[in-house]
Length: 419
Ligand SMILES: [Zn+2]
Image (cartoon, rainbow, N blue to C red):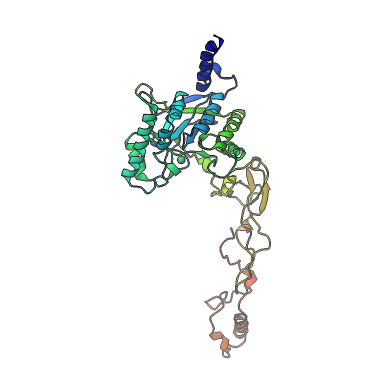
């Protein structure tokens, strides 16, 4: 009798924990801050990595996406982690995988996540396949996902191209069929040979650097499943919030937004450097905006002081004939050490940094002799010109015949700038 009573209680408990219902959410759960309802016909392509638009997220808002599944073991683990934090994600599933594991497709749906399309067989040829081939991949996966879900359960009209290998014709096809093409804002490189700790570290540090974004993960890897609890814990600790995205339907109107909220890149995102600046060299307190570490190829500033070389060290090969020797130490920029979170400006270069204060030129020996002899001849007798004067005139002798005098008195000849 006791066993008969307990069984239904266990079942109820499993269902509730699986759905992550609000009643069972711990008070400090990450949860879902808001749900964005998007209309794919209005915004056909999103993701800052490739497109001009991305989802209209506020600062510190993150959209979780999982590609390539479902795989029962790891997708199940991901679902449990998401449920423990009562939060929601979008799963871009492969049709073939859905055919193999339809129950897992239904479980993902039943637990409140968005089911989206990641092609039928995940070919890495979307950038060069014909449109009929692409259409077969897209429609085939929609059919597989719908078959797995059954009647009355909708697949979102969201498509992520395998490998992000886009081409115009495919995107036009998707847009014409009311399907939104999803790229992404932030990756955690979980398809590469890195472990769970590093996946979590990259996800967090890149979201911190961008401030918000659509995060790509893959629910087919054990290490991603292991990284997810850490990622969610860190997001929570750092004040990030999770946003769930669903498509608009006749009875679910789109979230009202302004066009600029969809802009993937604001001017401050670009962090272009150096910029053209008006400089007053007469001032002693000039400074320039420091480059963002991204300008220096550092994708992932960890907040520690980094050694950053603002310019390549000059190669100091042997001089060619007539070449200009480089200064022993580059006047500017030099190798500097700075903590990216603390330094926002650097001293501006001085005026002399933009040209050589003195031009070094090593003329060929015979030419030196010719010039010397010509000078001697011009001050002595015009009648007894040495034979060497038949050589071309030295470059710093005026063609008008008026000698310009000692070369050091002339302004330095610029050979271009050093930077
Ligand atoms: Zn994929």
